[in-house]
Image (cartoon, rainbow, N blue to C red; front, side):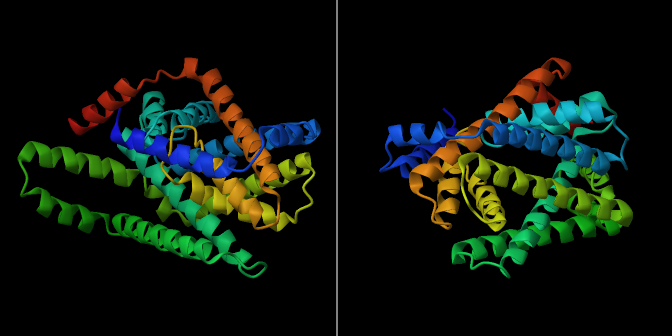
Length: 328
């Protein structure tokens, strides 16, 4: 077993233990029987809509490289999200760049650049929401510190991307000086990969598209907040809307912890921790976490399985594609 996978499973086991410790299974089952199915259906609709909007936003990021039809974008996104949930050690993050390179002329390394832009946009959006929350609620110090760290990291990545785009010629010249010390064949491979990668960052130079992407990113995360609140209603929780914002941010931090595939343990622990800030009993918080995780994974799995036949995907082929681009 891969050491990273083994470590992730251990972390998952620990977080599951901490989440269920002191809780009766019968109490959890009793809570599950109280769920209002009408709200569950609305929750599922919002999660699917959010996934669709994510695929549309990715298409906007890809526009400077190639305009790709929305059906292909949603198909690739669905299979890619399934890969992220199912493949350990975050290898699934490479699925979307790989798959879109099979359906278009976009290089996998260029597509990877668009995924990084996506992550930076998400980071700034969520951190912006976290900063706004400070005006309405006293957040735990660990949450504030985590937000600051994520903000500084996202800012550093964004500044690096901006420098690479606005000073592309100088960047490539600097890289070439470093590559000159390497064997010619290896230097050519790295130079080609870097060139393709920076192509995927071109969206940063288009202010209108960038502002549109910020709007889409805010919409995506507000849908997530709304979905959480709808699930609160399904459980009969009388919580303020702000609780949905807080839980979303804590969950984002929680699932960043490397665990077993499917976010088992970290998702549940984050929900229990987040709801405890609003005095929700642990058994009710765990019931909520179980349903929230199950429904979210069901959407990911069902959509992924539906679109797998339309996308030729295997981990071995993906690795071969990476190696092939290196050899260009």
